[in-house]
Image (cartoon, rainbow, N blue to C red; front, top):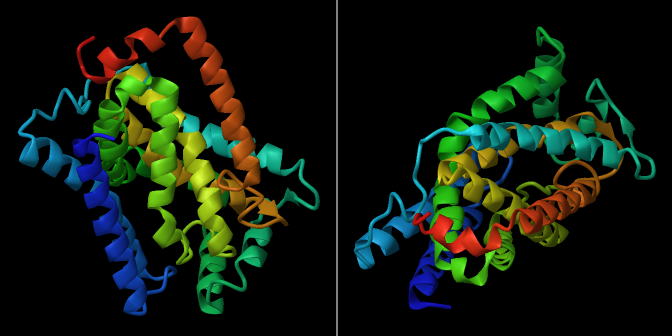
Length: 301
């Protein structure tokens, strides 16, 4: 590990984990508006640290080396639409598991979170769904995709500039797969303090740390592939934003199971991501992209 990478990781983990620790120590709860604010601020720390290290300490340029490009290409569309596809495929895989069934009216969702969310919050959510002009599933998809390409992408850029921008470039000599998997592992561990407080796996916060690490490990190469093919970390941010906006659909329409088993972030999702990685591996090997990978990431090709 180079000194530059160590500085970035040390700063990022220290700031983020202190933030999460203070939130917990001050009595913060993850199912509150304050947690949403913390979550957004948490996401911007990797970008902040990347800027400090790249520009502030090493006095090096940022835009081209870190892949900050708004030049649109078809991979931006792939980045936007792939996450909901993965989410819906994970629903199909979830249905292959024991005691899992479709729940179009979201009754399974309310059952699953009845012991976690306050009754008044659940009742408010149920009432809001009943008042929706169209099916909640399709409305969630529309809202998720809209947010994914706008406000979610802005927040996700805070992470992606650090992971798929700064760190991907600094680790490019390792090759695509090793660097992408390592970044995914780091990314997963980085989530640990907020997972322990109930983020993403409120039913199983402790086991959720391992699940989130596995999830990020498998998701990392997919986002890195988009970053490489689009030649833009912005596309990776769109993919990340779209995923944050649409992943919840995969548990909204399922009955049975838990946050460890069903949906895109559960065991079913890990299967979907593993299969997606296998497809990408075959495409990457047949395309002969490995040799050009370092130059593409460094902005030289």
